[in-house]
Each structure stands twice: as C-alpha cells, then as structure tokens.
Length: 397
Image (tube, rainbow, N blue to C red; front, top):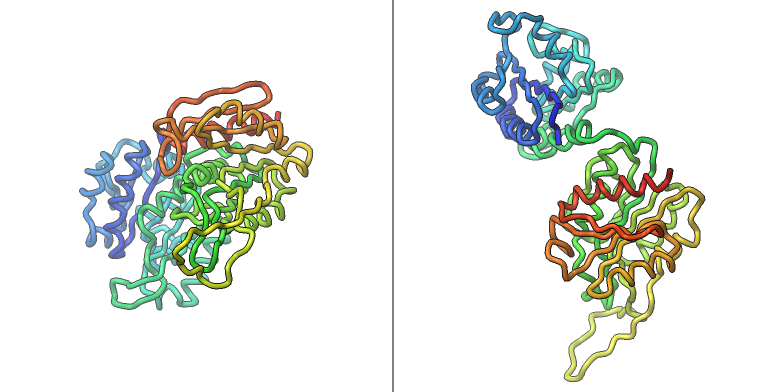
C-alpha cells in the first residue's frame, strides 16, 4: 500500500520511543521505505540498532557522522521524504521545531523538509497543558504541521491525564490517510450507510440482523483516503470509525432515514451498504413483555424505504448505489431493485457464496447497472471498496 513511499520517523527522548519500533515494522510490512532519525537522548530508551534491524536502513543520530554516502545527508533525506512524523515528540523538540531551531540531525532534517509533517506529543500532563507548550503547538499548526492529539491515561511518571502518545496502530492510520491513495476524490461529498438497524419490541428486546458493517466501513475508509468528504451513517456495530470520516451513529431504521435524508441533497454519491430492517413492531411495549405459557404474535409494519426515497428525490448529477443481499434469484431480484428504486448501481452478493456475506473480511459482488452485470473476483472488502468507488465516480462522467 505504501510501495515507493519514503516515511521519515523522528524519535525523541520519551519512554514512548520503544513503541516506534512496532510502527517501523508495520510500515515495512506496508512496503514503505522507512528512515529513522533519533535524538541523542532517545538512544537511552531504544538503540539505533533496533531500528536498523527492522528497516534495513542506517538510523541517523549524529549530524556530523562521516559514515554516509557523498551527499548532505539531512538535505538528501528531507528531499526523499513523502511524510515526516516525529513520534514521540517531546516538549523540547516541539519548542525547537516551532521556532525553527535546528541543532541536531532530527531538527535540521525536519526544518529542511517540505513534505507533510506530523507531531505526536508525548510528555507529562502538566508539561503538555503548560501554556508555553500549547502556544508552541499552535505555532506548529500555523505553519501547517499536523498535531496528533495525545491520548489520556496512566502515564509512566505515575500521573493520569493527557500526554500519552497514541498507539502505533493509530499513528499508522495517519500515515496511510496521507499517503496510501491518490486524492482523486478531493472535493467530492460521499455518504455511506453501514451496519444493521435495531427495531425495538420493548425496552429489553429488539429485531435486528447479522450485518457487521465491515463492507460499509471499508467503503467509507477508502473514500476518505482518496480525499472525499465522507459522512458515515452507521447502525450499532463493533467497529472503530475510519479516520477522517464524520460518523453519525443511529439505532433504528427511522433514525437512519432521518440522518440520511437530512444531508442527502448535498452529496455527490450515496452508497447504501446498511442492512436496514424492512419491518418493525407496530407497537413498542413500554415495559418488558413477560413470558407466558402460550405463543406470542408481534404485529409488524413497514419501515421507511430509504433507497426508494433517495431515488425519488435525487438531485441532478448525484450517483446512487444500493446493496442487495440475496439467498436466491440474486440477479433477477437485484435488477428489479435497480429499476424500482431508480438508482444507478446495485451491488449484489449471495449469502450462499463462500467468501461473501456477513462478518467476513472478503466479498464476492456483482455490480449491476442499466448496462449489464459485472461479477468481481473474490477480494478483500477494502479492495472491493476501491473497485466500487472507481465505478461509481466513472458513472458521473
């Protein structure tokens, strides 16, 4: 995903420095060219050899190290960088870079670099909240640097509060958001729905389905990485919201209808990947329904048809994409849905097909438009997401 990209990691002297070894390893697995620069004090927490072993590249510490190729090393590395992230970023290093000080290999290279710059502060809560540090961070923002907000929790010093460096997985997400994809959807607004809905029977019980939201979340993540402004309307799922996405959590079909229709007019594309309930209890019990010896019947009524409403109220140039999960007659049912709902595309899959369906990390889908049907090969849901976005935005031209 990061093949051909150079990621420069700056490591300053915080106990959190040991976590960057994991980040470096994850970046290498993404096929990035990873270069690490350490401050001299950072070597007290983790050795340069660790990073050299993980990245296969010399770890730089000394500005005047003569053991390098014939070039001005800090300038050469600054030119190579596609992104420069200092993590952990101590209060001292933040103070330096906010004022253009360049007195070691890390800060010199940082000052010479024109690539996107990220700082992940890591320090004691009192140091982080000190007005001087906050002023320095604001200066960094003024000059276009991205500040990754620290987490709150128990710190190595024994205090509890803000100042904890985010986990490597979070730092990786920032890098992927910046570099993983071309920003070919910049300026586009995309609305994605995902997950199931829950239709209450009483305060305890509800009707739902097996949707996990993985496909919808993959689409939202892919669109955001490609530069789109993404709104994700999600039913209850056990997934973390993708970075750079506006999450609108909902519970019921009516909640989702209201959330979607309130912003639909401004969207360039709407992708309805949610598994919305078709029926809900006609009457919701105010108290828990008690068990009895006989059977129980629940009268159901239709929920609002979100996709049909969108098809009837679409604006000119807007692309609508629906999903169809079937167990039989997949193509026939999906073609009928395409026409009935007045949409541009239906993404159909069968619960009977191995590798597709709820809860899997892969999918096999058939893309149905007025021009025909195209079956895609088995691939990850992240890959499917990009394939769908390619076709959705090709439909606009």
